[in-house]
Image (cartoon, rainbow, N blue to C red):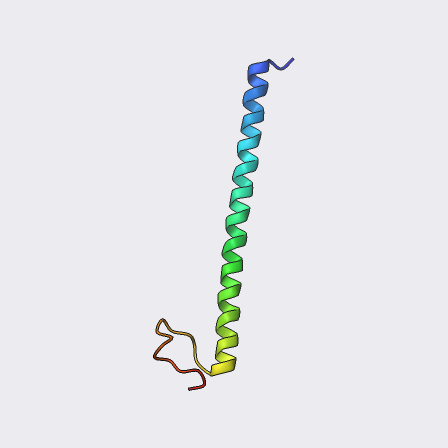
Length: 64
């Protein structure tokens, strides 16, 4: 028979594990999404304007 205290600890442990896994998963997802967005962005800009975006958008003219 499982004592109540032990059961409680086990349940909280399970919850913590599940939360940790979910958090890791979310971080991984967001990282890959960011990477894909960046790459797609680069590619479309390169295709459209023939240059990679830099930090100074003002000095770089589109189509140059």
